[in-house]
Image (cartoon, rainbow, N blue to C red):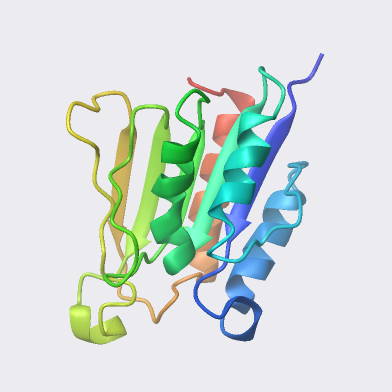
Length: 173
């Protein structure tokens, strides 16, 4: 029997008007056989995504991704779902101006691409995810990319999609 794979993605601020890359990436994830709900969700729909995760089957593989403010809110979703394992979480350029919630230990793998040059995005893609104190469980990777904001380049999307495929094939492995 195959485990259900449930993923949710979030737009950045102003969503559909400014972030077509998030829509494109979510469609690619869906193409991998992932139930993406109505992804991409707006950056403020954190409670809905957490509710979806909290009500998912116990054996579900849970995946999460977002762009800009949506990337900032990925750790918020994890915090709202503390009793669920989130197998993978990806962020395209979290913003210095969004939520800065550390990643808790219910997330097994997290990878964020950020722009290390503050002037390149005026801080919109400069924030780097951090682990919560005492979290020694999450494998956190940060990739410095000098991309325009929100950073959903083909190269970064391909990297994240390969990681998603790996996690689906071996969740927690």
